[in-house]
Structures are given as structure tokens and as C-alpha cells.
Length: 87
Image (cartoon, rainbow, N blue to C red; front, side, top):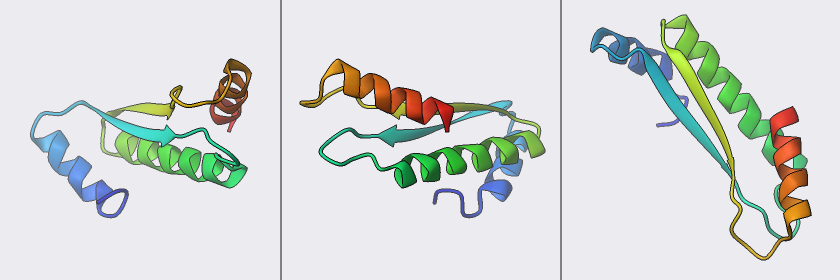
């Protein structure tokens, strides 16, 4: 379902007693990924989600999860994590 129809779902969740919600964006590391466009798109989606939560009275929890598993080194993981958090 994603962001489509999220406003209505959040409104319903609030009526059912929810006071917070969590959204996760998974960022994989590999050869030539993630791209800057990928990072920006995920950050934009997380921001839209957070704004919709606040609009409906819910506390947003955002989780840009950079996956550590793979053949990349720690420096690459650091660089991708930093780029993700700065975006």
C-alpha cells in the first residue's frame, strides 16, 4: 500500500488508539548502489510519512536502515549511512 491512502489509514489507526507509527526504508549496499537518487527518494518518502503522521496526531518513527550485510567494507557503510542521514 505504501504512501497511497496513508492519510486515511493513519486517521483510522488514531481512532483505534494508536499514538505512534513506524516506517522503515531499507538501503542496500552493493556495486553502484545505492544511488544518490535512491537515497533522496527514500528520504522524501520518510519525510512525507512523518508529515502525514503529525497531521493525524501520531508521533512518527522513521528508520532509514542501511544494511550492513554484504561484501562492502566499513568505510563504504559509513559513507552510505552518512549520506542517508544527511539527505
